[in-house]
Amino acid sequence: MRLTFSDGPSGESSPYPPIFSHVTEFRTTGVVMNVFLLDPSERLLSAFIWVSTSNTIGLYALPDWDKKEYVFIDTGIECVRPACISMFPSKKKLHETPSP
Image (cartoon, rainbow, N blue to C red; front, side, top):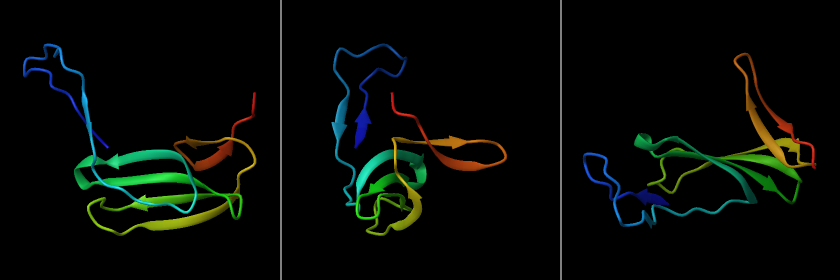
């Protein structure tokens, strides 16, 4: 999905709403939990998905969304609650967020 704004070059607001347009499409093996636009200039996109058959979290990456290529890794991390991603300087991890 692409979002285009019609604001003028000097930054004045446009009376027209933003326009959404199609960029690409892809299918995953599960339900998408999060999508990350990692590098728009390189067309790099990733997503965490819930893999229902194994009840685990999978990592899905499109190295270039103009190509029909992808990388999928089932992390093996069980999904028992809504998941959230934390990035710390010394480590990266997936952790669970308690349900309300």
